Length: 297
Image 1 (cartoon, one colour):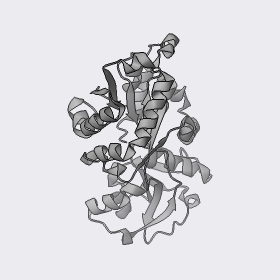
Image 2 (cartoon, one colour):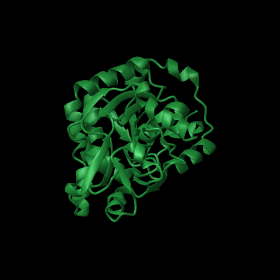
Image 3 (cartoon, one colour):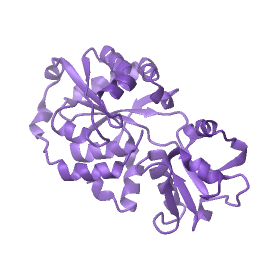
Image 4 (cartoon, rainbow, N blue to C red):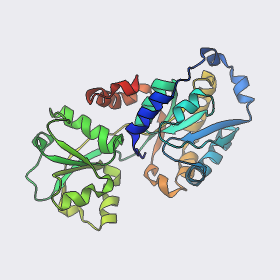
């Protein structure tokens, strides 16, 4: 998911979000929830109601059919605005990227429901075909083009891989954030390596009029944690479990409805899986190691 100015929004969220969770809300029973006319749904990286309708209107209609309850779209204006919305009981279900999930879980005690497991979702490190760089350990002193701050595949996972290779991301390498233009910087020799997502790689080359034969992938990560649907902890646990079960059971229908939007083509051939908080420990670890762990506490 997109991560525009993610850390800036995190700082704004932490300084501005002072609401507290009323633990008594956790006792809400399932019959009360089912009696509600609406479940309110938002997506962390889609700003405004028009874009939310465009990208997730079909999905919300299908989800309403699957769950047997009306889904009301609730727009947010930045990636972390869903957390105070959850705390204020303005939204019930949120679709979030891994970074946003950690904020939602830490600050609003959001409960993971379903993860979206993308078939080919890895971080890759790419060099020019004529480069002498063959491994991550050789990147010391080099310049790396990454995507956006907070991007799972284009920032956090690559940073974790550098750490695992024995490098200090702050001192051993220089990182520049160039979005998808990192490939052009690599081709021109302005950077030494480009970190991106495997399921975006060929599309980016095609869009830039480049050929894969001019580049070499020197490292591919394990499958990355996917985006996740989370629920307000003010919903009853048995109702959340019912939602989880129905979404898994009807996943083909739900995924197809997501794919009606151009922005969601990355979810093609994805699978809905039960989401566990521990699935996102890798992202937590990165934030801790780059000195940003306070965002998640």
